[in-house]
Length: 225
Image (cartoon, rainbow, N blue to C red):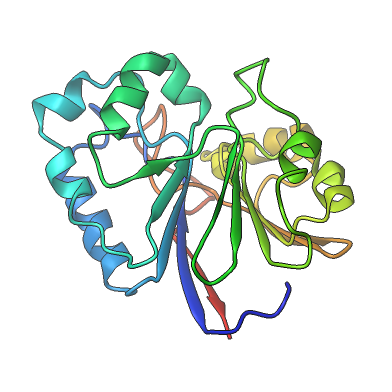
């Protein structure tokens, strides 16, 4: 990772799957857990919403999302479940929260970090990483948010410093993690690809069965000195 002029703490989460399975009470606990870290920046790598925005409105979950605190902002990319929930409805909902949505776009933070947010693999017309990299300064730190961890060699070749992804849940229920390990080059945890650092989260919450076997939910904290 390129040198930062100041210390930085990032809390990174994915796969919250807000809806009928993960409701407002669970979200409240997640928000408290995130805020307890006093992050400078919060990153969300897709699948904030599960299968429909209706339960989010019914339980007024935006009230809890508004409690997230990070002085440098809260940034998110879309996951496949935002498309399953109805992409227009999902975007409309997110825009009514403090979360800033990145869709095939780049934002430069006050400390010089450049955040690249790719639209989900579900969008077959999404821009290529090479196209997005044309808008960044490679002498400054580059963080990539991409929901599904495919084509990680491309991340390495592009010169990305840190990629954060989710989607896999690390299989969630053993032995499905063997399947995700087969499908993805990296289905969970940290790995270095050349000069690029990649972290694939097992997800903060659950999808499908309301339990895990042999895997763990996680909130990832990056501390840069």
